[in-house]
Image 1: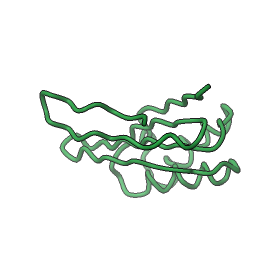
Image 2: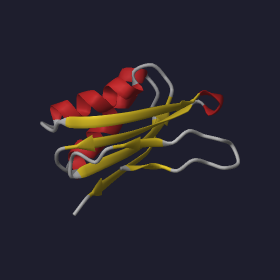
Image 3: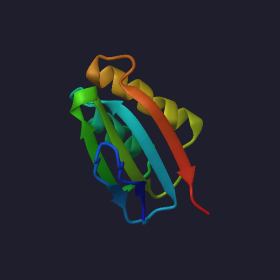
Image 4: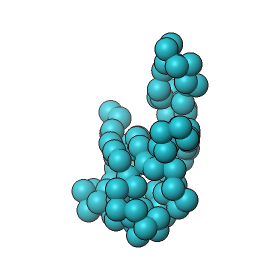
Length: 105
């Protein structure tokens, strides 16, 4: 499984999913309505499949974290499209705070 470990100081829950694809996307985004949908839409538009997702909201900070297992890596243009689509859908230019793609060997 891939995920985030428990934080001993704040007691944050573990965010993990079984590895079923060869690529992970780790995304920190605002909790604004539409930001999660933008992720799903952009993956679909890229012709990739979202195999598994774990989502955790951190409402006190206005942030959320998604860990997605997808079937193949996205190219740079497709990753940029995630950021653009999220901004269009939410009306918030910086709705995607961090986007990291990890390809598993």
